[in-house]
Length: 640
Image (cartoon, rainbow, N blue to C red):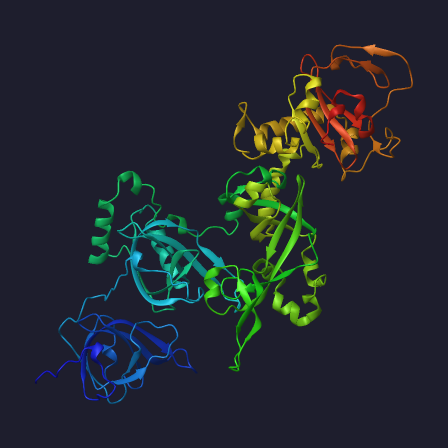
């Protein structure tokens, strides 16, 4: 039988009915029936001819019964008299604008000759993917095929708060091509699981090459992001095919072994506890130590939302394209009715110049400044709509729809009050502006009220709350002479507070040793020393939670109840050399002590608590009402 003339896909003509194409099925998927998901409604295909041109095709399941067994990937076919339709899909799987319909008139037979390449790859060099600033930044372009070496991977992300209530799985990694250019790849759901399955089976594999075929891409922040295109995309990981084997060999031959050892492969993609990000991946900081950070990074803090920094503004007009704020601008343009002259109109202008090349549209987004407090201080954070939506299940548009008066300055939605007095772990961004200007005000990237996370992070505060969880501000440690105290804590000597000194030298790195002694040991030693120096009554009198014992309590002039015995009114003073010489209560003693070991301010009861050392480094605790502190060597303390 004579073989019919073959028409290439690029030469398909809408005016031609009788023609034959020779193609390979490079991708095949099915769509379920509308009324029964167990049945196939139609088959969708991507066909490729011998020149590599691709076209999308489909056939109804009822129509394909005679040749249904031939519909499989890599199968080569002769197709005669298919019908050409218009491909009106917004997101296209191929570049051709036509779509082939295998209707009842089409004749499908096997082609025993190979057609084109086995996989039909059409790789784009990363340098060829150029950003078009006139494009909508939220719109993806498709299709794209990429191949690259995995140089970095990021933790698997599981989102459970999607609009349809379903879990959303996401995984991101970075690919590098043979020219050294890099792109990001983000895969979702089944494709993310495919990466995880590979990582579980190949945990020690660092040399990983990935192919993403029939993907989509867009630019974000100057970087290319490639993603899967629904279920059409094909992902191959270290597959034993020529394209991957050749690429890996060439890539590794161009880098040193030292450079290769820095690549993580897909090891960071493993499933992690959702709490791991807060407990181990980012540095923890107290609020009081934030202004000491000197590099751009993310940190974790724990605090309670105490108030709103401002109730005049709780939302902003955001660019629908990039979410940056927009402003109004008055411009002059020719009158639309054709008459002479110009008219002034008000337009929206985005802070991102790339968005201003076309019409800018705005949408309200929540942006509320909150005041967050821990035991070291208070800070202003900015909470955005994404996090508020997770917590309160409401966005700015919904709030404004309920009450249009909320759009006026000074009108604050009561729904946001549900955030007050709630304790969270916050992941915040330290920006160059914060560092340069020592500026308060940080953006919240993420937050959680998970009890386990907060409980674990709260344990760190034990370092600066050594007694009965009482909120104290540590002033100084291990001073050599009493006259050094004022200088060491005075802000006239150094523009630092004693709290910040403590955080910087000790609290910031709780795992490090200080003079050969771990911080945890120091903390426990302090607690034991204070316990041995206080009697039960003194300890209970300091606590805001424990009941005070009766029998030894007195009330001073400030109506502050304490548990110390006050000496009798007498002029007799006994001179001693050591604290161990104190023999009885109710006696005035005179002693020359060596140094202060700790000094802090109990703000709740407005008093100073001092740990003193004598000549043999024995310790004793002294409690001084704040009104009396000017009678002692530490009277120059300006931090109080």
